[in-house]
Image (cartoon, rainbow, N blue to C red; front, side):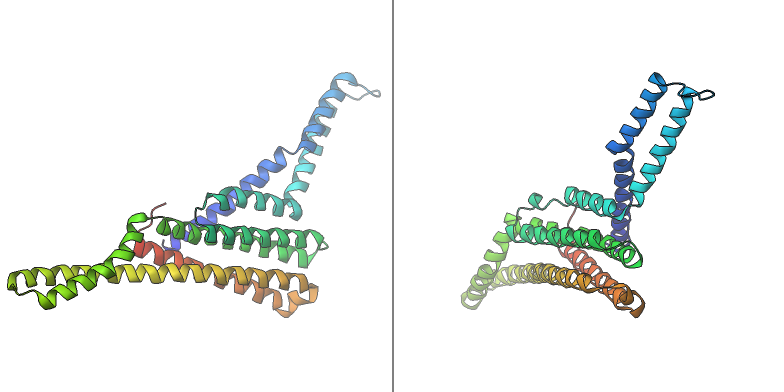
Amino acid sequence: MTKDKTDRTESDLRTRLRQAMILNAVLDWRGGVVIALSILLGFFLPEPFAGFQAWYWLVGGGVAWAALTFSILSDPDTGARVAAELLKHNYEPTTLHGPESRDKMIKAFEYRGRITSTIARTKPGVLRDHLVQTANEIDDWIANLFSVARRLDVVEGDRTLQQDLESVPKSLQNYEARLKTEPDAAVRQQIQQTLESRRSQWESLKTLQSTIERGKLQMDATLSAMGTVYSQMLLLDTKDIDSGRAQRLNDDIAEQVKDLHEVVQAMDEVYQYKQ
């Protein structure tokens, strides 16, 4: 996966989040009540006093609905909840077959939920706005964490690959032993060619093994960092915005996202993963 492709993935995530928030606001039940009430008043109480016209109710209802929709869109609690729901829908842990990766993704969503609760308890202001921005960056974090988990899932579920990882080393030993004892020169040459091919295959498999291990370690590091971010968010206050502590927190998240990008790219290069 190239950096441009990853950037597009993050951009798509934010686009889907904005669309989900707009849809959530537009379809909010309170807005439906406002519109329905204005229609009913226009029908049953068209002229409550002299000079009043029935369509005034519709205009007033439309204005009230627009104000309510804007309020919902600008509410950080609503944004955090919609983001969490969208993330869970797009990166559902139960779609992963590997129990290890699945458990790690579930833990990541637990952290995201606790972070959402922390934001909800924070008073409106600069600090809360910053925490909302931090949560948005963590959403990118989760998206990339799932990319690593899904690739690990595919590799570990590849039966042919797993069989090769077990059989190729044994095959190498057998060919090396035969090469030492084979008396026929032509056969030895053929064994040598086969041995070189097997060695090349084994080098590729070892590179893939190393990349898989790197992916697992990076997932562990990301979860640990999520826990650190969550604990630091609990300790942040308004003065930390000016001190740069909050910015360092965002920088740490950006570094983790970058590391996840690199792992995804490395796995794609050695395994030729296709979504």
